[in-house]
Structures are given as C-alpha cells and as structure tokens.
Length: 605
Image (tube, rainbow, N blue to C red; front, top):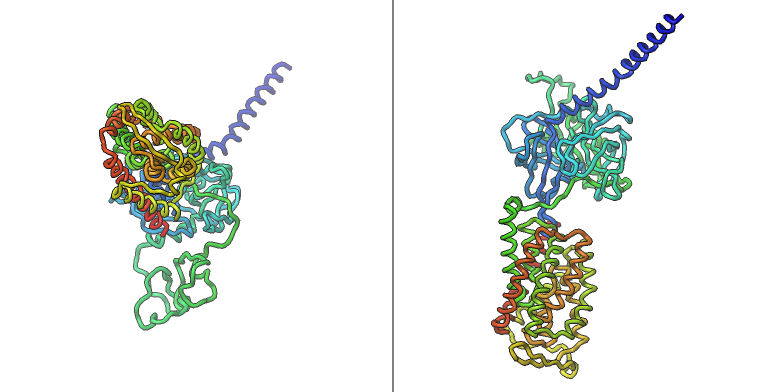
C-alpha cells in the first residue's frame, strides 16, 4: 500500500515537470525570436542629429532615429527630425560617439519621411522590410531607436489598430499603425519591427497631452515608406539579367517619376495607362493643385495623402540645446577663469555707463555657451543682480544716487520684472519690436550728436526740485517730473524684457534726456533701480529653472570686481563721453533687434 502511494506521488511530480517544460517551450521560442529580431535590426539602426536654429537665434539639436534601407548608405527617417536642418549627422549602432555627416537626398512633409545619404564609402547593412499589408491587430511589435537620446533602446508591444487617421501640425496622415510599444521623444524615424526582425513601420508620433508617452503611439506603414525611398534607391529586381522583349499585347511597366521622353509620341499629355503599367507610383496630396487635366482612377498612378481627420498627436523628435563643444570641453579651472575675466570686463563697462550688461551677457551665453534664449536671459539677470548690487553700494558711497526717486521707481519696475520671465517663455519677434528699435535708433543718434535734453512737458511741469552734493563736494541741481518718471519706467521695464536686457541701457538715456537728470546721478540711480528689478527677475527665473549657477557665479564674481572699477572710471569720464558710449551701445541693441527680425522673416519663407 505504501509503495503504491509513493509511486502515485512520484508520477504526479514527473507529470508536473513535463507539463511545465511543455508549456514553457512556446515562451522560450518567443524570447529567442525577440532576441534574434532585435539583434538583426540593431546593425541597421542609426541615431540622427539635426542641428537647427530657432527664431530666437539659439542653436539646438533635433535628435531622432533612422534605419538603413540600402547598402549604399541610404537612411530613412522622419521629415520633422531634419526639417530646416543646417547640418545632419548619424551615428551607427555601437560605434561609440563617432558621428558621420549625412546629406538630405529627398523629403516629403506630407508623408513625414526623409531620405538621407551617409557620406561614406562603407558598405552598410540594410534592414529587412516586411509587407505591412499583412500586419494584423494584435501582432507583436518592437520599437527600436534613441528615446531622449539613449541610443539602441528597445521596447515591446502590440498592434492596436491599423487604420488611424491623425493630424500632426496641420498635416494629415491616413492609415497609420497604432501601437502601445513605448515611443518617446527621440524615437522619430526609428523602425517598428515584428518578432522576426523585419520592419513593418516607421515610428512617428504619440498622443501626448503632457508631451510624454501615454500608451498610444503611431507609425507609418513600411509599404508607404517603400514607395517613397524607392524613388531614389530603385526597386529590388528578382534577377539581374536582360529582360526579354515584351509581346505587342503586353504593356510596358514604368516609374511615374521618370522623365517623359522628348519624342513625337509624348509631345502632348495623354493617359500613360494606355501604353504602360505604373510600377512605381507618385505620392501626391489631395490638397495640391493638379499637374494635368483631370482623369479617372487617380489611384492607378498616385498614392493619395492628406485627407482631413481628427487632431491630437504630436511628433516625437527630441529637441535639445546645442552646446558649444569647444567651450564645454575646456577644463573647469580654465573655464571658470575665463568666465571671471568676462564678468570683470562686462561689469566694468556696464557699471561705468549705468547698465547691467545684459546686451553682452545674452549673446555670449547663447552663441558661446549654447544656452536657450530663456536660460541665457535668466542667467544674465542673475549676473546683473550681483553687478548692480555692488555698483549701487559704490554709487551710494559716492553720493551719486537720487535715493528718493530710485526708491519710487524701483516699485514701478517690479511688475515688469515679474511679467518679463513669463513673457520670455513665449518670446517671439513681432512688428512692435521693430517700431521700438526705430525709437532706440533715434534716441542713440540724439545722444551721440546732441548734448541737450528733450522737454516732453512744459517747463512748469518739471516741478520736482533736487540738489545733490557728491562725496567730492560737487553740487548739482535739477528739476524733473515724477509722473513722467513713473510712466517711462513702467514702459521701459516691459519692453526691455522682450529684447532680453535688464533695462538700464534704456533707462539711463531716459533719465538723462527726458527727466533731465545729470549724467552721473542718472548712472547711480539707474543702477539702484536695476538692482531691485534684477533681484525680482532672478527669483522668478530660478523658480522657472532658467538659471545656470555654474556659469552665473564665476561671471558674477568678475562683475562684482568690475563694479568698483566701473564707478571709479565713471567719475573720471566726462558726461559727453558717457553719452556717446551709451549711444553706441543703443545702436548695437537696435541692430540686434533688426537682424533678429530679418532672420525670423527669412526662416519663415
């Protein structure tokens, strides 16, 4: 009896092991297929970087993915990855950080596809392409690419739908593949493969209300992409041999993109289908004007796109600021020393003429350090705070500040300092900036060629009488209008934030020309006001995350040292020379606005 029980237990244990082994076999096979599929396609996948320039003149990189479709080095990616690119590079699977230059060969915004040619004589391994028409809902798929710049990343999911119609940035895409395989920023242009390692789609977009993956991604069917890139690479022939002559009853296949022969038969337009079979169709938008007289059966010669559909998805190219590699590779000590020296020079000049130096900080941080316009302005405002704080103490010690007026105007400038960081997040060039630049040009010319003041009001309106005696015993008297100072300060605070400067460069001429304040008193008063406004602005930009402490502090150290030198130089410099220096700086800012506006117009054309 005991032996029988032990035999039953033994057999039950063996049967469980056998059933587990049998049930595990399909999963093991699936795992092997996935491993082999990703291994096969990886050698064909590339990371694509497109260097671009924004409307605010900042250089940045659009990072996407792509894959080789021809052994001559042709790479397929998304159009939005390389749109308006100044330079394009690709890096292949596991070749370290080496980047190879690539040329744009063909692009079609209506398909969101672009074909690149790697500038190399190497033989490249093209990805295996499947027939996306055979794809079914529920099929397993794998997404390969460089999400957020992480190269050679793989995610897994299923096909959720095969016929989604979406609109991305005003362009309609029809019959898109929907998948829950994770697609993030940087996956644009990467392959979507099946578990056998063959490409079935091109990762393009996600439905992302907050800009990140939510479980809904979209891909272009590979069959549609084949029609696009085969226009350049050609179609794969079944055999390489001379074709036999076609019987008279058989129509000759043609590529619709080929040039029409210049002979008597083709002198006038006629229906090509009368003599030919269209082997390669042309992709056209239904919104585009027809290039010939209307004919029936457009689908025989064309792949039609751009039907109206619902909106929602966004593209998934990753845009990151383009850092200046030469400056970034400098050692910490050398870089910090150069930044301190830069701050010393700018701080000296700025304090000498009563400005913060933003007109120099911002271009330097954008062009040399590769900052975005928001980060450049935020970091500049922080530097200006330290410079103007030190300068204000020096000017106050020298008794060159109209303290009562400075306190009142500091309160007026605070609203602009709060709104400025918020406005600059949506910074754009517009017509009123050009009008403002013209006004600055007029003021700069007046400062340079005239030593007189501008009376906007009748003489009796300038009823605020002030007498100030500085540390050296020099006494000055003047009269001004307090209401005019309020209005002018508020307007200057608003406009100066739109062009990325602290405001001192405009406020000093305003105090001198329109409020009739002596030059040296105007310099100290402006510095005090700028100290308050830059403090508020610095706090706002810190909250928004637009200040780089590692750059701000070395420049600020130099600016603090420059403040003392600047105050001493301002006392040794005649008012006429300071007026001319201000005029030249205003002229520089004016041309900067004009150039930025012209560049924006050219980029939009």
